[in-house]
Length: 639
Image (cartoon, rainbow, N blue to C red; front, side, top):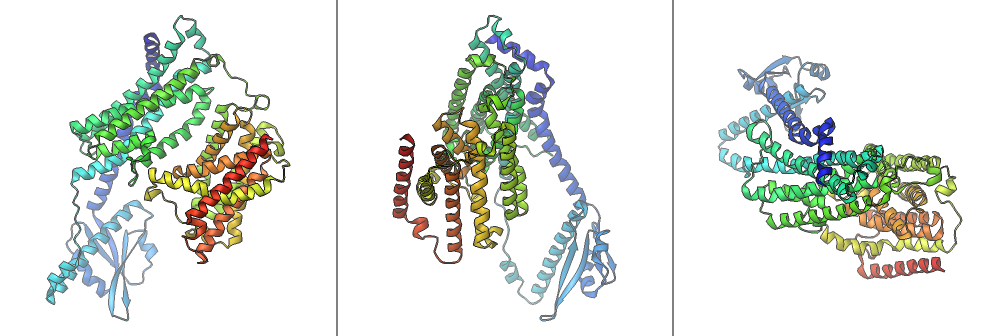
């Protein structure tokens, strides 16, 4: 093992990419770029605020009376122009145009500041002018209240703003929200590429046979390769921590002051090292199951996005890491690092998270070593004939990852612009286009790839009943899970009826929320994915995997259980009936029921505590109905 480790170290040190990823990236590039950006932006803003600012005002007695207070000011100067001059033309030259507005009812005047955000410098200057005018307004109010003898009343009526946090506490809080995410992303980038190099590189070059013929034991070769990836991860985490400390210690302009006491450092170091080990072991685990470095590069983006989202979730305000999030390694590690950086005593949670990270690492390492010990590591998969051999498991997950990224980026953009048209376009073009592409790749008919087959009429009422009843047992379980994994306020879903979807009539809402997903999501998941996976997975693995994929596709970690279990039931209908249509019926019934309930609540026909939504006894009755229907489906399939 020492020989392999020494050999891999030499190989990596000869590679420029590795030197950049392992040493320069965490030690210099990431902190330096972040710090320099902070420095440049802050200095630029400071220069703009402290530099000379010339703005224009209409030549009116009311405004002149106020703006005389700018006379002799070292930063601000006023240029007067005839009233009625076009504001847009003036804003091409000046950062702010001052005008007035009079109310006939109370005979009072209001100062109006016109400014544009098209140019950064002028925008900052306009903010500076507004701040100055507010101070003038306060000074004038103080004078006038003093003249009529109620100065003390005025001062007491204005709430005082005071920040009770010290500058050190403010700096810690700022860094605590940034550093854990940065550390995790650097570890992901470095260890994933290194594991691709030392493991997938062997598969690409077909050079493992040379190592095996050298007389070194297979076990030593495997563990040597794992050790180099994990060593790189630990080195990167230590270097990054040191670099942040150094920049904060010796460069006052950079906001990386994480001055930790011995106690905080003692808690942070084992968490960080164990996290490095865990991320490295996951990178090794993924690399062992992929066939080539090209597939690893395809998988890198969704993996990095997953790490980023879970790391951010760990630093959200309101996420309680003392509950079920202890079981999610990246979330709890980010959360613990945040608490440590803020100076809180977290010795027992730190020990728990460290042990849990080590346990996860052991499980991934054990699984990886078992896989690499098989003979299939010697097989170089150069046959890309999917039509003959079908998709490998790695290819299936790569296809799924690409679909998720496409839906996240393109669908998210479309829905952000307009949620109604965005949902329609996402379903039709992204999921529909996915089905068309997969039909072409597999060279199957649409009826074959989408499972558009005849089925036993028994599944029609079964699907309808499950569409109406299955939400109740799922909700009963998910409510208990939410006590362990509470949803933070920042992640709570907004009310659908409060969006543009709520402005639709019930027919249009049913089409967008129920009809389209029932067809296009079922074609994608119970059609395409089950078709390309059914020969590679057992029945149970097929249902669980496609169900989880369906849950993850909805991109909300707090609803993965609900959508995932629903996906399993939809998969069971498809596998049992041999057709996607029963799943389409159930999916439509489930979504349509939700839409109808929302409209009934919106119109005041029922309340949110109606028996249809919150009655426990009714939920248990529907749970029993769901269980009976599922039992009937399983028995019928066996018979």
